[in-house]
Image (cartoon, rainbow, N blue to C red):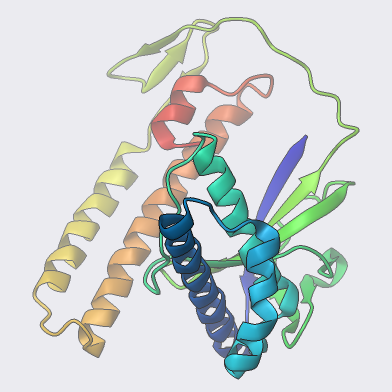
Amino acid sequence: MYRALKIRIYPTDEQESYLAQCFGNTRWLWNYMLNATTTAYKETRKDLVFAATDKLLPGLKKKYEWLGLAYSQVLQRVTFNLSSAFVNFFEGGANFPRFKSKHGKQSLQYPQNVKLMPQDSVIKFPGNLGLMKTVFHQDIPDAKFTTVTRSRNSDGRYYASILFNQEDTAVVAIREAIGVDLGLKNFAITSEGSKYNLPKKQLAKLERNRKRKQKKLAQKTGKTSNKRRKAKLLVAKVYSKTARVREDFLARAISQDSTRKPSYLCRRFGS
């Protein structure tokens, strides 16, 4: 059984500059490989397998020296993820892979050589990053982690998502049915008597704030101006705050009954 632990990280200005370069390198490599794979499939009706795309990487690093600034295993992970995306597409489990944009969320993966140091509140990344400050708000599972995904949201926050493989964890199957009644006074009431109240006032306040920020953004001229960029960041921060409020509500709802996750609440808030 796999379990993901998402924690916030706090890079320095120098680390942020290096991360921006790494995000750009992995994004460029993904788009390059995706274009090459798509072109090959149109011409030969065969997709490039992982081994074929992985062999292109050394030549690209020689041709584009700046590509080698990113950690080597991070670049290798790009070709692996692209190959997996095509496998999922041809098996009918996902849509066709899309090109990545420099706008919005950015991410990259480390398959190994990452060291968690909760006693010092830092994570040690390989390559030129070194130690990065973080906050471990949960206990680290006693299991081996497979990948560490480092991401930057559109609001400028950085996170590390750590995937653990808990092979020895016992999983208890729950087959009992539960009824959910949607009401006016309470957001939802289960057949077992559990009540869930949506934070309407807080969400309404955030929605009013979002409309104000969105209106100011629409008034900015010039797509590349600094004022428009700052206004766009303020809108992204409101969206991020709203998402965290909904996640906190879902977490509190689940904690009321640790034996099951209310299916309706999970569908409603995208868990």
